[in-house]
Length: 403
Image 1 (cartoon, helix red, strand yellow):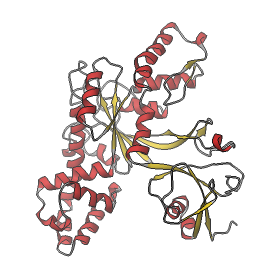
Image 2 (cartoon, helix red, strand yellow; image 1 turned 90 degrees about the vertical axis):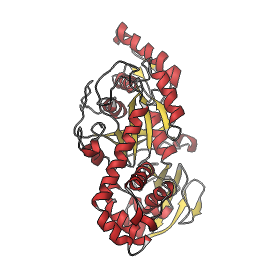
Image 3 (cartoon, helix red, strand yellow; image 1 turned 30 degrees about the vertical axis):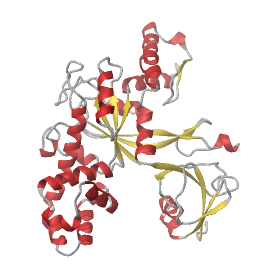
Image 4 (spheres, helix red, strand yellow; image 1 turned 180 degrees about the vertical axis):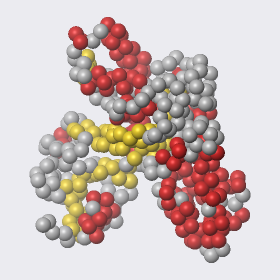
């Protein structure tokens, strides 16, 4: 699972990334602080299984506190975008190229309206963040259309054969974007077009198709960053009202970063995504630091329920992209692997994943030798083509023999 952190330059993308991952990145109030993409690991919460089952899990990756299992996902913070990037402005297509492999994106906007179209600092309330969303949509659409234009001769030649040949040609041309056949079919329908009529697609139709293709294949959640600034409240309401087809999450990346660093230093007790924290070592905090923590509690946590960083990740993966978490085990009775580790792994997979598809995700040979699967909690055999459910524990039986 790879999540892209994208948006206009200088809106707090790198702060969001640092808050989600605690990875060391350069953060400053100027355009193009990030040039080469930053890569890191964040964690999404899955309601714990071990506490309800009366066992204690042994995560190979991530952690579990008995309430939540924290499952790792990869994050990619890419270079900021400016209008005309698809035509070479700013860092040009670098921003777009870096996001090719992302399964979905978190689009960070400056909800305080304090960043101009070029990413320069401005007076809060000056620029409407809705324009940032529209700009990113346009740049994505023009970028995809540019790929189509460069390969249009090949696509048109396949169109002379059949609609299925057109689909294959589009898949080939767009393979670097991790685009599926279903994405193409859905985008064609959403644009009111037909692959059989592709010979007659105008530039406007190609752009409309490209717009829907990226929106379907690379779903986004909007992180309305800097909600702690007074001017952000009116823009947050406008974002939610005007962009009802997106999930808009109020975010204070800076607050999350402060809380995580304080927790790491042992100064507070804080779990990402929680609506409050507890000061555990007040003697080591200055009066100013305590004041900052009080402001975070009053202006952000009590008002919005969290800093929003964790919510963005989980809204995108579980609600927008509709992925689920499954726990594969080797021993269905002990819920463990062959070493005795209980519930050691969690796989974040698409909602309609079947047991056989899961087997291939674990290991190609396991998929090839798949016989059947069992729900280890219900002790029931699962049809190989039946979609798995969220938080299910799965034992896969195969013809493989452990050496």
